[in-house]
Image 1: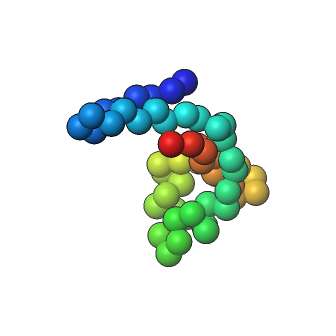
Image 2: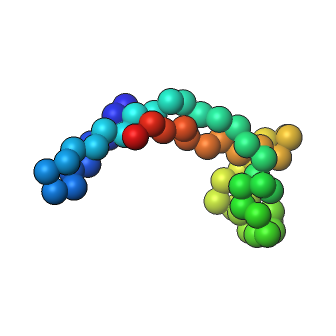
Length: 55
């Protein structure tokens, strides 16, 4: 699904390239897992899905 936003006279189309699974600890840095896992649930390998987008 493409999202379109317009800034002035420029129109930007944001295209999804799918999902990528990354290490949750690396993504959130020093934030403890007990805090961020309430927002997004990691899998058994401590990975979270992240959307890849081309602008």
